[in-house]
Amino acid sequence: MLQLGTVLELLDQGGFVSGEDLATQLGVSRTMVWKQIQTLRELGYKITAHPRRGYHLVARPDKLYPWEVAKGLANQLIGRTIEYYDELPSTNQRAKELLAVVDEGTVVLAETQTAGRGRLGRSWFSPPGTGIWLSIILRPPFSPLELPKLNLLAVVALSRAVKAVLGFRPLVKWPNDLYYQDRKLSGILTDVSGEWGRLEHVILGVGINVNQRLNDFPPELRTKAGSLRMAAGRNVDRKDLLRGYLQCFEEEYFYALEHGFDRSLDYCRQYTATLGRAVEVDDGKKVYRGEAVAIADDGALIIDHDGQQTRVIAGDVQPLFDRDGPDS
Ligand code: BT5
Image (cartoon, protein in one colour):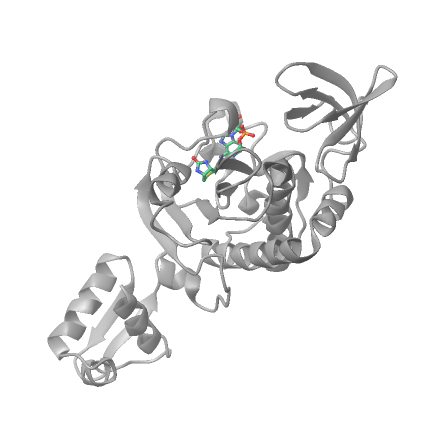
């Protein structure tokens, strides 16, 4: 597969490249070059061949092939290895199977998931070609108590990446979602393993809706899910966005390793889809109705309700009204 990336680089000069030149530069036979071109065509690359002038790369497919994502990505850890699949039940599940044999920072990626998972046994809609469904394998030196902050960090990195690549800034919805205009663009599912008090592995699963139109979502999601395309009003290059996300994630993660999570938490407080709103919070044991007033330094949400304040470490938050209040 590495060779395919090299062939593409040579073809990517804009014009025509002769089979002979390719063979010389790659140090292989012309038959081998032809085979590689065929493989690229099967992968969806549009390559024309002219008898005298040679090969010409006309178009690339809309696929998240590792060599495409790696182009121009200077990361030291995150996404240095990308395990790519056309289809998986769930990238988190595959990441779990690979834990023992892959390095930290490995990213497991699938064009579609047949059994994509949300939290608490819920399902995650992951159609082919329109989203980014990935898992990042981490071995962070954090305690399990820091997981809520790591979840938020993953959402912050995505918000930053969208701002950098597309120019608008989606908001962080505590504890694990990215929202734009009250629609969910992305969710995070973290699976962990380790002994008490120590995290051995973290599998950070990230689902990002990129190019879906409203009607691509199943009816039950149409009032609450959104995509970056719907927000931007145009088609979004999934490769650019994914590269941007891996860059922002590494930057945010390295910063937290060195200085802690304060910067990520401040971002959550500033660009929040949760704070200052009347909400209903279900922490799995109890349901609170009140106002989300703060995110604490350990990542917990503070709810003001019935004349008292409660800290919630993990749970589901539903706004009680639209953004503009009960009368809108
Ligand atoms: C999440 O759960 O938001 C975590 C989603 C994580 C998905 C990624 S994709 C890669 C990796 N591999 C996996 O198998 N999973 C991860 P939660 O907060 O429980 O939200 C789930 C709820 O969101 C569902 O019950 C639906 O109501 C809604 N939902 C499902 N698919 C959605 C979608 N594509 N976009 C927006 N909302 C969706």
